[in-house]
Length: 223
Image (tube, rainbow, N blue to C red):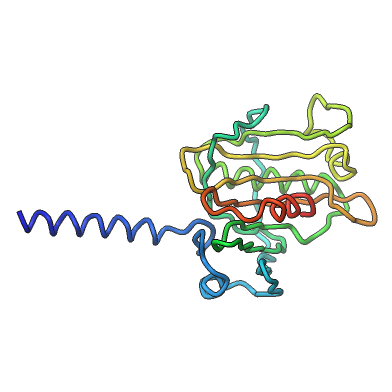
């Protein structure tokens, strides 16, 4: 009986350690402090604020064929949770933001640094990222277009210039049974740009350890 108890305890301990060893985004786990993130993130740290660590990643050019992806159009279900795939930059430079709340790391953002002359390049990269994340998650993205006060388009993917000028934006999310992380890929107008331009960002948000809602909303609005 004692031997059985010891085996059971060992199994439970191993399971707990395995769950703790599993990363949430890159090498980081939700709830980490800034110092803990700085120990595991090997990218170049370019700025450290009170609640945000900003790193620079990417720049290695890798050819990637753009394939058609299955997108389910419609409103999102707020009860659905989404999983955190490992997302690395392909051929471009990105800002990598680790955002902290009262209980530690609760939000990670990967934001495209570069600007393209042709708005179609943003949409191509958006499709590349969608393909990568869909393959890793194993489920199709759900797509939502936001129009504000502008006219609704029959096909929101056919006019990338309209996105850069602020007529509408695109959001892709991946529903899953995972209860830890919400993930969204967003393509919309770049705020405060001197001329019409697009912004592309991936947001990873902890379900159990969210950051301040006002800060989260501000990052979604600006990035």
